[in-house]
Each structure stands twice: as C-alpha cells, then as structure tokens.
Length: 239
Image 1 (tube, rainbow, N blue to C red):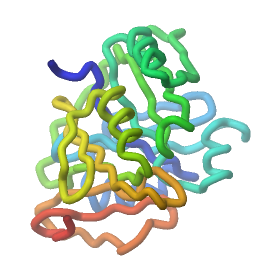
Image 2: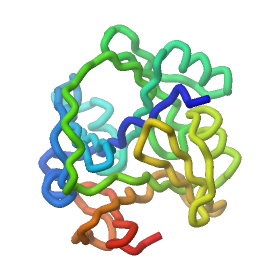
Image 3: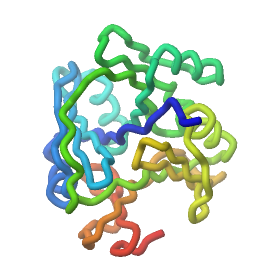
Image 4: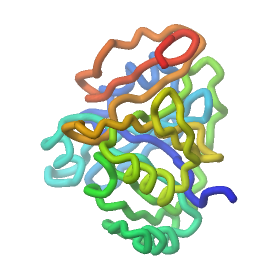
C-alpha cells in the first residue's frame, strides 16, 4: 500500500531570493516553476533533472513575520519540507492520533490547505502538510541540470526518527551507508538520517546532489544560504 504522503519539496529561508540564484539556477541548472507573494513572505520554486523541487523563501512586508523571526534567530538555511496529502483534515487527525501536535491549521483557501507538525516534534526542521488543488504549469525535467537526491539530517534517537519519517509520514525505510533512509514512491527526494546520540542539536545537515558533470561546490556551507550542498555519485564521489 502506497503512502498517502508525498515529499514534494525542500525549502530554504533566505534574506534575499537573489542570494540563491547563482547556485540553484546557474550552477545546478534548476528551471523556474512558479512564484508568489504570501503576506509576510515570497516564494519561488525550481525543478531539477529528476523532478526534485527546491523552494526559496524571502521575507516580504513589515518585520515580525515567521520568516523574519526564523532569520533573526538562525540566519538563512533549511526551513521546511512539504508533504502533499490528499486530505488535510484526515492527515491532521492521523498525526494527532499518533501523538503529534498540529499547529497552524488553515483550510480557509480551497486551493491550498496547510498545517504543520509542531516544530519541537519534527527533529529540527519544519514539516508542512499540504492539500493542494493548484495546477501550476510543470516544466519538463531539465536533462542537463543536477538532481536533488536527499536531505540529510542528524537525529539522536532512531526510534523517534522511524516514528516521524516512517510511521507518521509514511516513508519506506532502508539502511544506506549507515544512515536510515526514507523514501516515498512518488517523490525523487529521500530523507537520510544520521544517528548521533551525542549530537548537540538535531536537524538538516546538507542536501545531496547528483550530476553527470562535476559541480564546483564549496566544502562547507554557502554563507548566504546557510546550507551545505554536496555532490554524490560518479562525479562527486562522496557516499
């Protein structure tokens, strides 16, 4: 039985949308999908060779919005992962039945309904549940672009990781290179969880990228993005 959840995209919170374009558009070859202002923030989405999608967020409007607070507290970096669900009310009820607190529930817009797993229960990243009836034009997967393969995170407790990414969100678990890897049948992006009981904090560590050409990626984090991108596979060589 397939999961009712689908990992749709990974989102980065930035101070300026333009900070992400040299990497996402120019180096990785992402193609533009859509953009929109949403009150206190604005987003754009970019699609890659395997159908993976990255979203860039920037603050919009007066200070005090959630993205302003995120940037003030943490600086730029990975902000959330979005899971598409067929029925938001059912997904929220299922989450609460499994002991997760749902916050920010909003079904006022028929084309986009959303809710969030409480951040304190989501291992250092925001998990958004979304019921979407929007029909944005989807560009063809760009053959010469990179592929978005996996979001790699650190967690202290394997049982908690399995409960969130497997039991709640429906990922199929396997062991890959010493990580717990969770995949969804309709999503090209996996979640890979490193287990470290002594980790000072849990959460995302890097985005793993595949590409036939060698990418000129820095060894560490992009300062403007607050995030690390690592090439894996034939040209990258990192497992």
